[in-house]
Image (cartoon, rainbow, N blue to C red; front, side, top):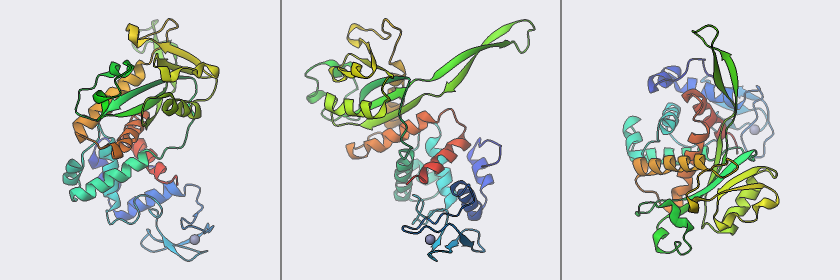
Length: 326
Ligand SMILES: [Zn+2]
């Protein structure tokens, strides 16, 4: 683990990692946390290594090949110093992301290199452990990209799949709602007074995918493979959700009737708020995203959303642990 002091700025990140060696030692402590030096080379089951004097390179006692804490991760085979990777992670997660033009200036690399770094990082952000969702899940789709101003409700119009969205790409989002409870506690200043405090038992978690279209065949398999049966699925009245009530409690919020909370009190607002963030990021930072690369941006958005309750330091740790999932 890092020191208990939180990263509040890039200065803190740079101070914590003054040398390439300190970066490597940190990566090694995350990667081989149990002290077993599992060899990263394919086909080798070695679990012991010699350490070189530089504190960076290791030699597997089994296959005799060299490796470092970066071998087999997305940072391998690039001449970019590790501190530049760490700063890039910090920058990419900070606020609403960063463009390759800006990152290139900030870490003194070419724009091509900055683009390469951000591209790799997005793959890392998307490399999450496959969690199944349970509890209450809001499901919603949105259309990203293109030049037309987004009109959310147009997807409900039967013939809107033609011109209106010809340059837009649909995204499906499943958002597991935050689980919380309230406790009463003594007021910190006024004696005898109690206040209600919100305790979050489980943070909201989102999974998103770029999909070909918003038909049943594109939406339902994703819902069914990612949401545990018995959960509550909240959606609007879009036909592609019909039939989910076989294994789920399907709650419909009728947007066509301008309903935002249904009679049982369910809402899909949280996912819609999330879409606003996704679109703002793409518009403000990246201006335009090709269909081919869109899913990367969607995964970056999901990662940032899912770990927004963590401090910068824990977010970096989460990103680094994602690098090790192969
Ligand atoms: Zn080996």
